[in-house]
Length: 296
Image (spheres, rainbow, N blue to C red):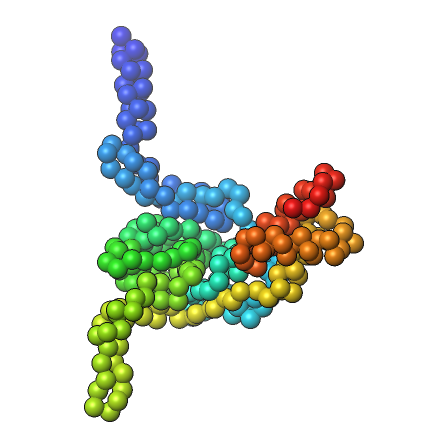
């Protein structure tokens, strides 16, 4: 009887254990990339770090025509992994120009030296203090990666990130930095009406309205700003050629006039000559070449 009771109790404990949130410290630290996730438990949600087993890494050599941005970001990251002073970084500009890819290239370059990447979505930015607690005391160096970051007025995540950048992350734990990408320099929508409350003093100096000051206050907390610009036609074709060679397309075919025309038509149809479009074309073209079909 006792044996059967013990089995029932064991099964009950297993079921209850599945409903409870996991220990936030139960993390596979052997991995180099993580994602902060929330899961529902008994009607509540709990956040935890989840390892990314196969992160989408890229080599810095695969990123063309962003050399200056690459040098500045790699230099900042190298200082960080060596325990030297380093800045939070904001990467802004044209879509598909390599902003997030450059951050992933940093992980590939420095993960052997203890660099780790934690992806945090905008919806979970209010959990930043919890994330810092989880990694505090770890010997690794963590980049908190916020991709495609934009805010609307009054969002909680905006104020959480603002407070974090003001010292509670870099100044508190010492082993975390924030790297964020955005299409907007000021991370918040800018409206013409915001300028109506600006004023001139007696000396003719312009004093921005409080709304504009608030828009600027977050981006100013990033110590390093990197700007990215749309690629020219020749730069776009260079990137197409790089990806075609990476995907095994013979050099003669990759550099052919037919491939060039097809790549430009592909970009015209997408309305963009970005690095992302170049990679998408290269994948489609490489498949067509392998299967003996017309180019896309």
